[in-house]
Image (cartoon, rainbow, N blue to C red; front, side, top):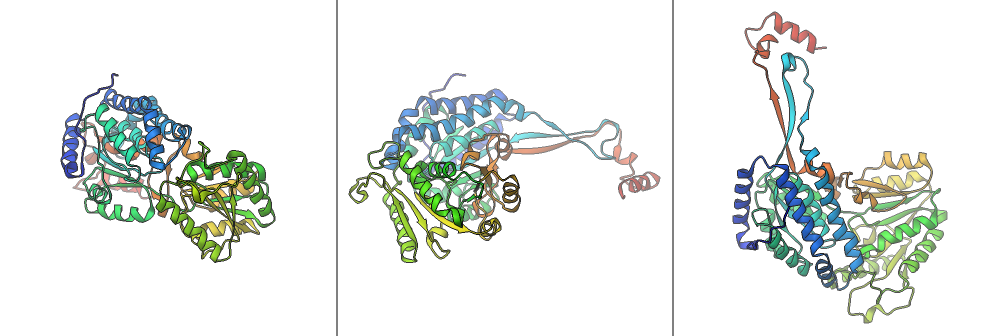
Length: 483
């Protein structure tokens, strides 16, 4: 499948309505969308990302002030190629109609029923800044596999990456297949109000409420991938050193700017000193220095760093102990970037902002518990999180955590990793999201499951007494079904 290098006009805010009309017209004219077309789009999307991996990594680093090439290759590039390759491998099987069973009397005399998965049409994607490539092209794997066209509104907080993705899309795709809309909040507001056939939003819970309101005017089905405060519960059977290293790795990846980052820890009260020591030791091993360390990412901009520093000031004012993990004793006040070291916050209380707001940065509150039930009750007393993490080897305790908490997904004995399993659905619940995608589940999210019932030549309704005049056949059917 050759890559088409046709130049296509970039969709600007002023013409997004026209692009949508053209995409929908092209989508309807193309039905049914053959597997060859779907695979071609998937292959071109994969080629776009792979061919331009270095340029995309440079753009992301420019937007962040600094982000390592290796991290972007791992999270954004590999994180996009994986879903696209998975969809290429499985799309033909996903597309097959599914035979369904029929209850009496509908199944008489050779009647049949099945489900066909049809493209919905045009899917809108509003992608965020924290993983700008992955959270654009990961969803496109499912959207293209389902036979749809797509319009993307990337984040204005990563302008270099957004502009590069838009320019590359114009080389690899006709804008009737894939179009980017650039701009700030006003463009985003207009984009969210378009009458798409489906809308995917990844971002903050507060903004998601406005997205839902905008989509409701056109009754657009919406998938929301949000965030929240993902808790980590350490059981008494946990290997503290191992858990601390895995938590520190997940928390410091992308400087904590991950919707699934462990947001706070719940640890047995007697193990809290060892956990805090373990976190510090792990952070020092992972990042012996920070400012000149190419592996450590900067906070995306000054506004977000000020927000994080305000959370820390609030915690200190309310009695928390804040431990700054700064192995090389560097001066972060004199830097030209917005890098921040890991801050471990002890003695936290619920009136502190670090325990109320999604942190989205390198700050890790630690809260203690006496009995496991106290930790479970604490989680259940708050909004349902996108992710939940449990560390321990006690199978009964693990089962109690899984059974008695509700979250979008769970990783046991690590953090974040369930999102990388492409065959698992990824999504939140309640304030952490609505709906899911990835793999087959994503294919179905962006497909219309159309029911088909095919009746034989003989009149089943008459034979079963389902039409008047009602008589003996009707009574027989009623006796069989009303049990």
